[in-house]
Image (cartoon, rainbow, N blue to C red):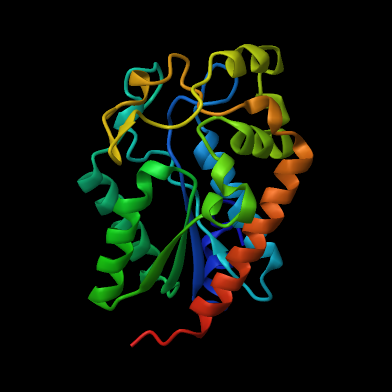
Length: 240
């Protein structure tokens, strides 16, 4: 059940204690992809996972802001501090738990959220009011994972599969021509670049021309099946 589309009486009648919370960001994704990319892909995977899972699940509205200060030089990017982001995630999970949805899987679409989500879900679980874990969709796509980049082939493929109207196809070739080959500026295992504009002029990492809609469907299926397995494991986990 999509919580945003339900009435409160529908929500009250749903017999489940399991929920998913998509989280993303509002940040640059090159000249060809929308600022909402991370939230859009998180929602697509969350819904695919719920569809693949054999049971009732509440799908909460996506949180559209994340830990994105690394993209602050690019117009339109909005960001929360890690402390604020963790608090928003904890309190949102707390709200879900107050209505009986005490098992929560956070479905994440932004790499900058990963550390904060790990900490926030651990804090929630240790407090005992709910059990929460974080799932980042692009960590669950098998051999495709190394091609992730930023606004590169995987994210562009997901958008072409689910939101083709939001991809500026006339800009993809130029975005690829100016893209950085990998994330960061690395020396001795250390990334010298705190912000993305230090290594990519247009915000793109990887080749977006390599991500077609068919790949997006495959990625959604892979991540959705992995999420369904995770939901089953969370549903069976003791809450005490």
